[in-house]
Image (tube, rainbow, N blue to C red; front, side, top):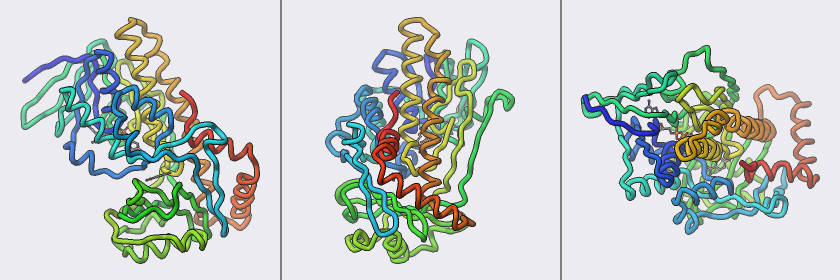
Length: 392
Ligand code: APR
Ligand code: PHB
C-alpha cells in the first residue's frame, strides 16, 4: 500500500482546492490535491461568472490571472428591471470598484493549467476518499486509485470537496451546526452563442417571475428564468425559453434580444446553507463544503475565494511564522464574511422572485422596496458595496 506525505492534503479540485493549492505553492508549502472526478468532468460544470474585485486580486496573488485580465469583461454597473423600466446601479460611482465577468469554468481551467505547468501534484479519479484522525496530530487521507489503496499522511486537511463531499460528512454530527433554507423555485438556465441583450447584467423582477441576463463574452450569453421545482429542462424548447425570457424583460430590452440554439439547458435549485464551525482540529472546510448561497448575488465562487484567502493566510502563518493564531481564528473570520454574503444573497433572492402563495400585500412590499432602492443613493450604495464584494 503506497504511503506518501505532504503538509496540506486538499480534498477536491474545484476552484477552492485549486486556488488554495496555487497560493500555498507560491509560499513553498507542499500540498497534494485529491479529486474524485476527472479533470474534464470538473471543467464540464457550468457555474456563475461574476468576480468581485477582491477575488480578482486573489487570483493575481496566485499568479493565475493573465487570461482573466485579457478576456474578462470589467463591468462598472448592473441593472435591475421591474415594471416596464430598467434602472442602472452605478457600481463604480457608488463604490469606486467594479466586478469582472469571467466564467467559473475559465477560472478553474486557468488554475488547472497553472498547476500542471508548475508540476504540482493532483490525483484525479480517486475513489473511496476518506479522511482520518483529524482530531489528533497526525491526520491521514486514504483513497483507491486504479484498484490500489493509497495513504497520504499530512499535517492538515483542507476540505474543499463541495456540498456533497466527504469532509463535512466525516465530522461528528454533534460538533457541527447546520442552517438551511430551501427556496420554492429553481432557475432554468440557457447558454447560447448569441450576443448579450445588454452590455451589463440585468436582474429582472416581473409578474411572471425572475429572469437574469448574463454573459460569458461579446458573443456568448447566459440567461435564466425562474421556474417551478418540479419543472424539467427537457420540457422547454429553445423557442419557449426565449419567449418566456422576453416576457419578463421591459419591452424595449426584449426587442433587442438575439435568440439562437441553446448549447446547454439545465435547472438548478436555490438553497442557502451554512455549516459551522469551519474547523475541526486539523480539518478545515472551505467553499461549498461549508456553505451554499442561492445564485442571485453571484457570491458562490467569491465566497469560496474569501475562505481560501483566510485559510491560506492562516496556513502561511503556521508554516512560515510558526504561529497558530491564524488557524485558531480561521473559522470565525471566514464565517463572519460568509454570513454577510448569505444575508445579501437571501435578501436579493427574496426581493426579486415571485413566491408561490405570495399575498398581494407581499407583492406590494417587493414593489415598494424596489421603488425605494432605485430612488435612494444610500440603498443603491448598500446593494453596490455587497455586489462588488465586502472587503476581507
Ligand atoms: N473526494 C474527493 N473529491 C471530492 C469528493 C470526495 N469525496 N467529493 C467531492 N469532491 C470534489 C468534486 O468532484 C468537486 O470537483 O470536490 C470538488 C468541489 O468543487 P466545487 O463543488 O466546485 O466546490 P468549490 O471548489 O468549493 O467551489 C465553489 O462552486 O458550486 C460552485 O457556486 C459555487 O462557485 C462556487 C464554487
Ligand atoms: C451567470 O453568469 O451565470 C450568473 C451571473 C450572475 C448571477 C448568477 C449567475 O447572479
